[in-house]
Amino acid sequence: MSNQNGKQPSKETLEKVQQMKKRVESTISGRINHVNQRRLRSLRMQHKLKENANLDDEKKNEIMTKYYTEERKLIRDSRKKLSLKDFSLVKVIGKGAFGEVRIVRGKHDAIAYAMKTMRKKDMVAKNQVTHVQAERDLMAAADNPWLVKLHYSFQDDTYLYLVMEFCGGGDLMTILMREDILTENQTKFYIAELAAAINAVHELDFVHRYDIIQIFCEFAMRICEYMDI
Image (cartoon, rainbow, N blue to C red; front, side, top):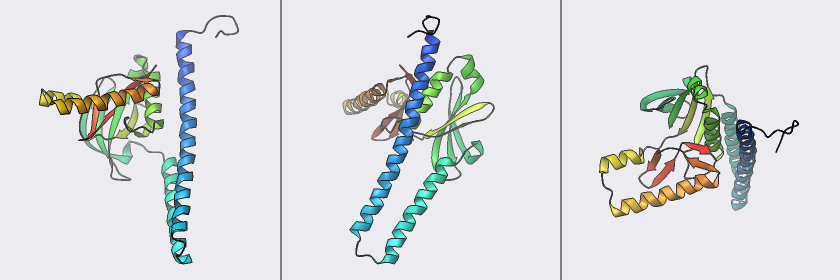
């Protein structure tokens, strides 16, 4: 590939093109998934009506009213612009190069989330903007049981906020430090889960960046921190 002057584009330009390509693909994939989910919910409602064909009109209207009410709520929630004031702080659980990770609780749903706050000027200074964008896009779009799910993202003048699924089991490094030596069955379990999780990330053309392995619960693992390849 070359430009109009016959020169090869720089590595930085190629990286930006690839990032934009993945962001467009992610946006399209998210919209297609949204349409498919709406269609699936509609089919479930219609199937429920067929299964209960003997119901009177009043009961059928109740089922349809409930369906449309839930659909309107989902649409409102998807359009709602959240900010820091929509979450209450529970506690800070970690600090990193760009900011910190907090446990927060949504004021709108009372659900606990992990909120990563990152200073934008530090990301720019360390040339990490494209990597953070790629990480955000992956977590937002990927429907994968091995990846930490991104629920919301927003920003202010100073920080970027990523509101993610809260993995209450802690992280694998803490477990290794606490247990010192794992049993054979524990080792088999964690290695099998980790191999499957990293493979899932590789299939999406990303790599796992650090040693952050989240434990979702006693029997499930999640991973976070990615960069594109």
